[in-house]
Length: 75
Image: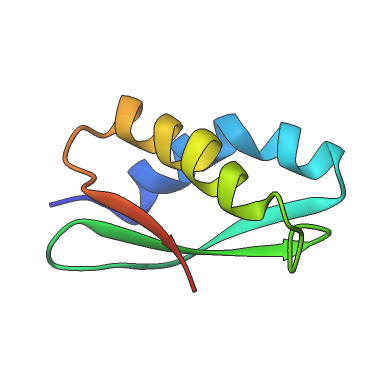
């Protein structure tokens, strides 16, 4: 089972680059089927590049650090 601590540690790797652009990523939920749900906030909320940030940044880092992660979704 994926723990919040594992996810937060992985998110801490990607947060500095997101925060440099005025945004942030917040863990919302880890589902039973290993889908991690996050909120993109600040400048990321409503940004046209947020989907790319989510999939190419956040999801890649989480999958590299926690192989059990099936997907990352924005809520």
